Each structure stands twice: as structure tokens, then as C-alpha cells.
Amino acid sequence: MNQQTAWLVLLGAACFETVWAVGLEYADGFSNLRATAVVVVALVVSMAGLAKAVEILPVGTAYAVWTGIGAVGTVILGIVLFGESTSPARLVCLTAIVAGVTGLRLAG
Image (cartoon, one colour):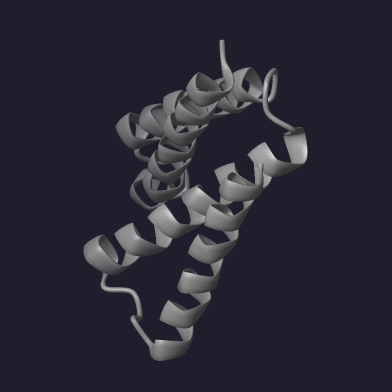
């Protein structure tokens, strides 16, 4: 795998991180078995993708980008799906995460 492919794998892994994080809301304390299964599968795929990406990418950078993308995706879906706050302070913090992830990618 080359570096560009590793970044794509990391992006996919981060998307699956968003899936499992949002899935926790639907899993309802793991009492909803179907949603719990989605959470578990997405978690395994997400971690496997991160593990594969760090074979090529620096672990600190890959982990920070993975969690950053996952956090941003989870916040956005929380806003869209669950009506979570869109306060200016929250959006500024979200922008800071995006800037940090972008900076790490460009500096990497």
C-alpha cells in the first residue's frame, strides 16, 4: 500500500468510526440487538482500517486524523439526526477540529 492509499483507508476507517459512534444512540444501551450489531461491525472495520493505515502513516498523525474526522462526522450527524445544538461556540470548535485535521494531513 502506498501513502495515498493509506490516507484513503484512514478516511474510510474514520467514516466507520462515525457510524459506530452514532450507532450507540440507536443501540440504546446495547438493548437493540440490530443496532448493537451495526456498532460492533463498524467498530471492527474502523479499527482494522486504522491499523492498516498506521502501517504506512505515522501513528500519531493517523490517530489524530481518525478521531478528528470521526468526531466531526458524529457532531454533524448529531445535529442532522438528533437535533443537537448548532450554537456558534460549538460550530467554532467544530471548525477548529477540521482545521487541525486538515493541517495534519497537509503537514504529513
